[in-house]
Each structure stands twice: as structure tokens, then as C-alpha cells.
Length: 74
Image (cartoon, rainbow, N blue to C red; front, side, top):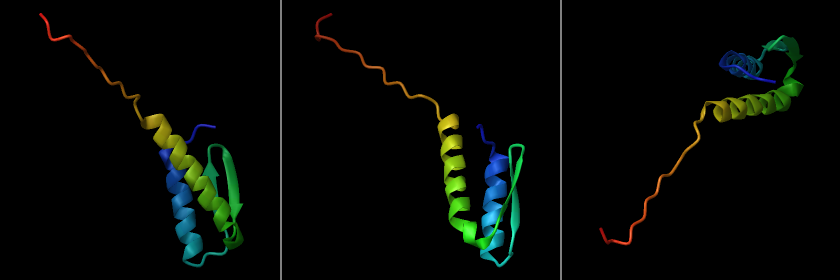
């Protein structure tokens, strides 16, 4: 599943709401609407990590190192 930065934002907001005392929060990830309670905080944090990893992997460019060698004789 491909995640968006909006998905990450909604998960982060849900974690904050649960931490500040809300009983149930709803998170929309893609086309799914999932409800989380305070007991599900670890699952929500795991989802946040999964989304963060997917976004960071998708946004990084491959790195190339160009090397040249010479015998020192022209």
C-alpha cells in the first residue's frame, strides 16, 4: 500500500489525541477508516513507523559515487 504524508499526519494527530485523553479516535489511511482506543496506542505507533519508513524510502534518491583512476602518466 502506498502511503501519503496526509496519512502520516492523521496518524500523528490520532496519537496526540489519545495521549491527551480522548477515548476513541478514527484514522483514515487510504480508503480505510480505522478506530483506535488507548489500548491500541502501540499499534498506532507501529503504523506511524511503517508509514514514515515507506515515505522516507520513496523520497530518497539513489546515490552514485563516481570514481576515476589514473596511473599518473599523461
